[in-house]
Image 1: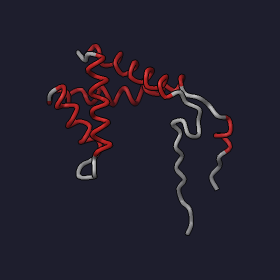
Image 2: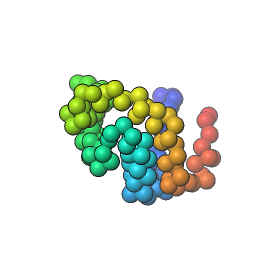
Image 3: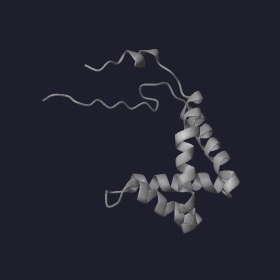
Image 4: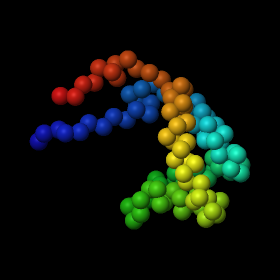
Length: 114
C-alpha cells in the first residue's frame, strides 16, 4: 500500500500550545469582530460552544456546518444566518492573528514531502 497522505494534529500534540490562552484569544477576537453586529460576547461564546457540541454529536446525517448553524440559530434566531459572511470574513482575515498565542516547534519545518 502506498501512503499518499499524512495528516498532523497540531493543537498541542506536535506543537506546544496553551489551549486556555488559545481559546481566550480566539473567542476574544471573534467577540470583538461580532460585537458591532449586536452579538453579546458571553452569549456568542456560549452559542459557539453549543454549536461545536452539535458538530461533535453529529453522526453524519448532515454536514457539521448545518449542525452548527442549526444550533446557533436556535439560540440567536434564523436571522443569524445573514451574518454567516461576517463569520467567514473573520476566519479569512482575523483568525490567523490568534497564532500569536500558539507555540512553535522548529522541528515541524523538517517535514518533507517524498
